[in-house]
Image (cartoon, rainbow, N blue to C red; front, side):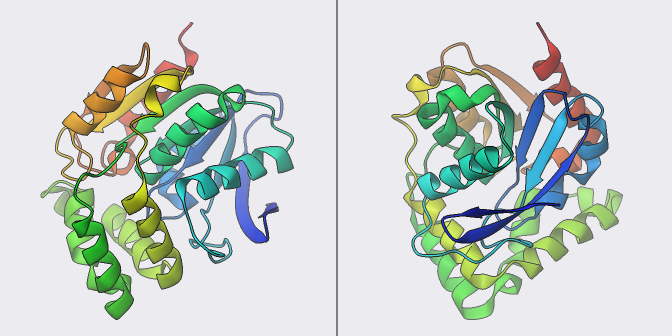
Length: 260
């Protein structure tokens, strides 16, 4: 699998699917790796050239270098596209991946075909939870917040129904380097995409989780209402909707990407 340099940071990338198929690029949430998409990867790769990657400071990618912003992360995605010779991609980003997708849709419109913004928000009026989270992780690493995050990621009964899936995601969170996690928290805290939304021209689907306390339906509707022609689908899930409802999520994404 290739490693692509983005201004000195090595980014781990995995590619699968037919070489001549349209490209679908996936971007995961804060505190996870590209393996967050394992439930969908084989399905998506039957119809698309699938590109997944670890964000800087996560997984097998390099550490953050200097300040991490949404622009920096968006330019990392563009570096991957350039490195792979991809003129245009479909983009599906969940949570932080959706935040990157908004930046790309506004600032690199010619590189984005269809855009899926999943379980995400355009801004946070109250910055204090992010400041508190940064302090907690600085003091105790991801373990200091792991149980609280899991309670946000999934509905209350999901750990009992799917303990292996929850354990897999929790292990990703616990293995996230402290510097990478904090840098990305700072990028989310400081983000404000509200003025970008009306400039997004890509055909867009917003996905929300009915029980998502982190990026709720109101946040999704805010995004949908400001992107011309955008649609909204609500799934019976909390924040990590693709893990909690893997089949419905895959069907929703494929239905949107393949409709005329």
